[in-house]
Length: 206
Image (cartoon, rainbow, N blue to C red; front, side, top):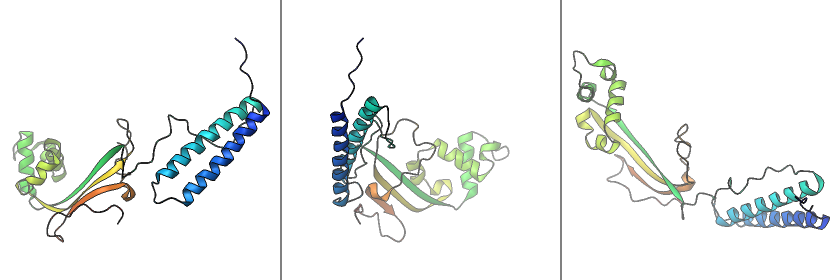
């Protein structure tokens, strides 16, 4: 098998000039950006990464030298999550409850466990165990609609719909709430006693 032709000096210099030009374009895009997720910056970033990767490759082939830059390959590059044109979304929900009747809560857990007050078993014997049984049995929306029946009183709640990068199964399970980024907010709905009713979706730009 014949050896692969080595890059010429002119090709290496051309690749270096391409990196310089890409740096200028990236800086110009950053200076002209209109927000945190400006698509022009994302495009310039990807072009700079591609130019730097090409220069690193020909430099190594020609001179057995490398650059100090760590350049992600295409498989590692991801687009900025864009609230205006999301590729995926995350729905983040918080609901607060007061535990107004622990006995009623434990009674609901007893029904789930099939145990009795005289012999409650480890799950429903405590408030925390009863809560685990309750939320393990029912969907959060059903618990919200039956809160009083379960000895709970609804407090404030909020629902966020945010732009997100597509995630592989299990990617974020170890830190599920780290991506609550207001800059990626598409819309939100808040319910609180301080409001008369559910709010209209808030403008993420506000």
